[in-house]
Length: 211
Image (cartoon, rainbow, N blue to C red; front, side, top):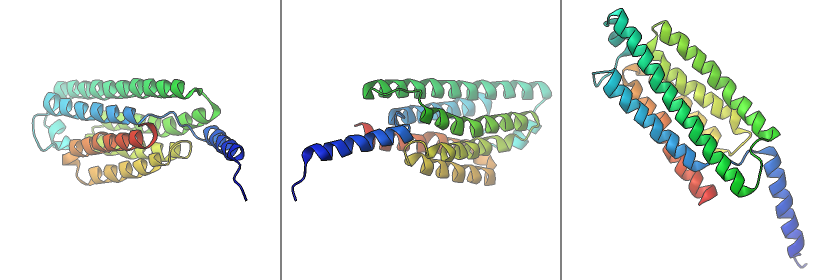
């Protein structure tokens, strides 16, 4: 039986259309690399600007400070976290827009709407919970909460995009749980979870889907 090149090409096109209608494929691996670099930079700034000890025990550090210094440190932490988040969102959006334009597809589709809803609901919940922890002086739990809720957000959004997102989410949750067990090393887990894992994930995604 002879293969019909035209039929094979038609099937390939249909498969591509079906995939694009059920999954958001405009995520860029390069954005993951930049997100990782931003996270590492934020951690280093926090290490040298906010804290002055190599082994960071948030409870002891904050509880031994006068009230005004504590408020100032809270503000610095919020500024650093907010700056990293803003840079990450702008960068991820920029790379996604560029990839969508190159592929000739729309960035705002029913699938992308479901992806963003699945992603941002756990992220917003985790962010609000982290603010409560910050102002209640449960500082040692903030980084674990960030990592765990971020992992949950990735798992939730994973069914609408590349499958690798799901496994990244699992690793983020494991890293968050480890950070909760060893809070004095929280910035190390931040660098690993948001920095190194993102960079490795980004390079893998770029090489697999974009290179």
